[in-house]
Amino acid sequence: MNPKDDAPLVYSTDKPYEENRSQRSKTKSKGRKKHKPPAKADPKDGIIRVRREKSGRGGKTVTTITGLTGDVKAIAKKLKQQCGGGGAVKNGQVEIQGDHVDVIIAALEKLALKAVRAGG
Image (cartoon, rainbow, N blue to C red; front, side):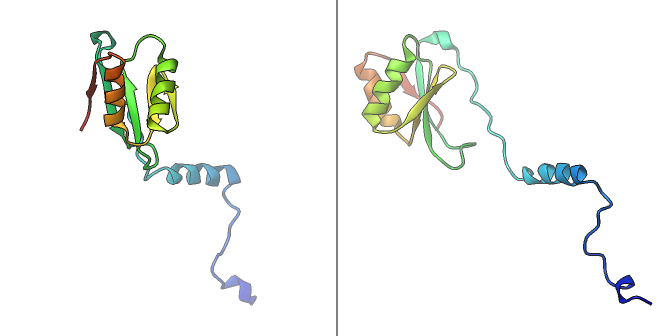
């Protein structure tokens, strides 16, 4: 009798590699929560909403500004300079890195735009 016959199975090639790979990708994202975008506000009401978001961004805090009209990129550039941080314009929504809600509301009011704090 061969001693290898009684040894426990350590590795098997019975399942093809593709099946194992698809199972790993399913279990990998099991614990992650998917980010839900905020509910769309009425863009025609003329109110700019400034909120602080953290969910779905890897724990990073971002200040988002919705409801801007006109040249959104120029306004975003001024706000980023005012806050001293980076940011982006995505789908008409301005995202500025960090928690700058109060600074942004004050800067928008200086530009004669009505801004309110949204969220918490």
